[in-house]
Length: 151
Image (cartoon, rainbow, N blue to C red; front, side):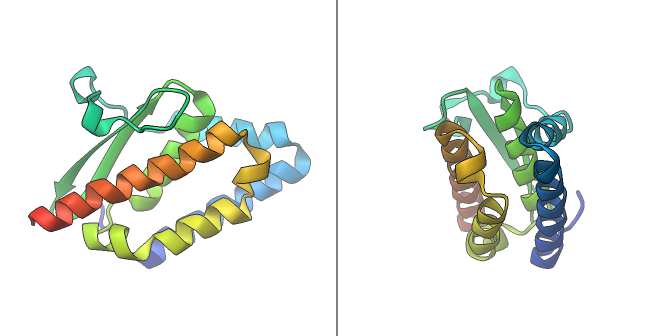
């Protein structure tokens, strides 16, 4: 498990923002292609992990997020049937994997919201996809809070 700091997360999201905005300048479809390609990198989950506890409510497509604590660091995996949502999930997983649970809970919200604002998710994505992004993040924080409370 790679360890990650909040500074690492910020740098990753800053780089992702630059790439997505550059693609969007060419064409919105190019931005979607990059997001969809990112989803192909996502470490999936097993059928056994597709439980109510791992289900992201409020998404049109079925989205699941599994987590574990490895050496005091969060490790997320996920699945989505929707290609764009899977890509957004992959960005979130990469951004938050390796952080301590307390860092996910207390140190990521502003950065994640800034990423969503800078990439302009509300206007470039359908409302359902933009809501999915927020719901994915909320479940990831909830899972980290549960891990922090139990450790």
